Image: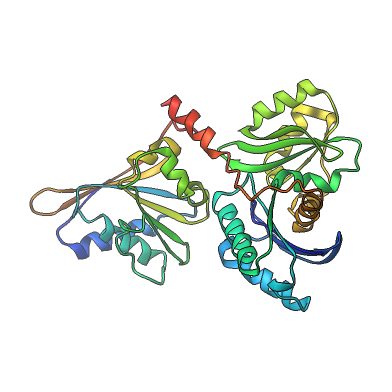
Length: 224
Length: 142
């Protein structure tokens, strides 16, 4: 079974193809080029290099958020279009769960954070791949006060570690762990792996973007 | 800062002078009645930033993107009514980009703006009075 996955929810554009849990290829560009200009090119290039066409793919997957509004729309529309064209199923995977996946064997908690701007972050908390706090959006200070009550070692990863690293380590001190920066970039192979697992366990749901912005907008409109 | 333009060429020329002072990430709000010359002023900004195309009215598209030495994003928010409408065009991806946002009918976006340059164009019977000020919005949600 071959799975094609894309993650356009953060700054990076990443595309991967796996076959029965083994990686065939992954292209990741950590640039600020808009996803709309780059993701189809990456898919085409990767499939060509693997001597595959969209018809050879059995399952299509997209990171469905939370994350960049335009990025998610581009990624999800692309995957749904390819899946419909090929007559194959499509699966949505949580962006944050995919980001935490590479640390699922670690004994610590994992907190992926993505930049939601205005000092806000999208976050969730996982341990060994299990969700402890479900994806949400809040001010980084509020998140840190929540996590400091927790008093556990936490691995931080995501596209805005640079921006918040000083504050996180000052607040959580020895409880904050920062892996090397190369792991802070999202990787579509994790999306593909999780998608395949969901599909084989019949836990897959239709792709539904999780923007998480609406709740925030309502909160802001209440403030005015 | 005040300036008086007696015709469209002068409005555009002043827009160009003003455009030369802009830096990556700057936000410019343009106010003034219909026909005051907001889009003409924007043409001058785009010229200063070496945009390849000359801006046209963004009223229909809501936002037009012009690649240049610094990219210019030209908005008309007249038809947007709520903050949710602003999020539906992913306005943050423009406001926090390295380009310059030029916003016509900007009032709805004020709660999202921490700092911006306000350009007000008034028609006084003979020419256009162009007023420029720097605004810091302490009540923004930034």
